[in-house]
Image (cartoon, rainbow, N blue to C red):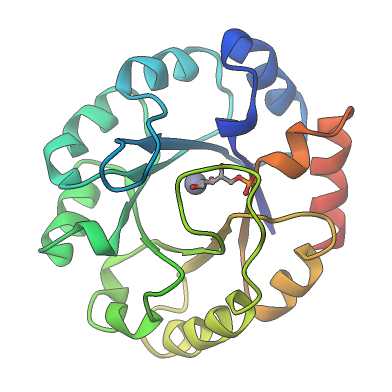
Length: 215
Ligand code: DX5
Ligand code: ZN
């Protein structure tokens, strides 16, 4: 199981400290949430902040863009150091083209699905994805309640994964904590994103370590 702490819940006035904590921890990736205030009802930060994060990060940057028309920014996210770029299926009119561009740019290509979007929409592009992110909350904010239907959705995706792309990574994002990590792992998840459950704890590195152990 790979663990990707989400910086959305970090201290934005002192990101370097939180990045160093992740560097020293057993976390695998650093999850970065980019929001445009249009696709989701919140604005976070963009490429200039990602480029500063990259200067300090010793782990791959897992960039989750919650923005409309992400094709416009594929190149610029590569330039600022994204290693994995995940776009929303709901935001892409030509998803196959978008995934192809992300890969051609030298990044791993991910697709995220909102809670209402069935995994079946990805059947014809699964071979073009390195990763599928199942959103277990409606995107836009950290610290929301986990949606229980997620387990069933992961199991549905595992069926497609076995058929079309056995190497596919299944990432879960939203409301992940030490209570649900094991069941998510048992359902077939390979990557867990966690923000609130890590950064609200007085010892974030130990939560990361426990999450790695239980999952
Ligand atoms: C939500 C973001 C998540 C968020 C997860 O839109 O995509 O990555 O930071 O945070 P928690 O773990 O607090 O739900
Ligand atoms: Zn995210």
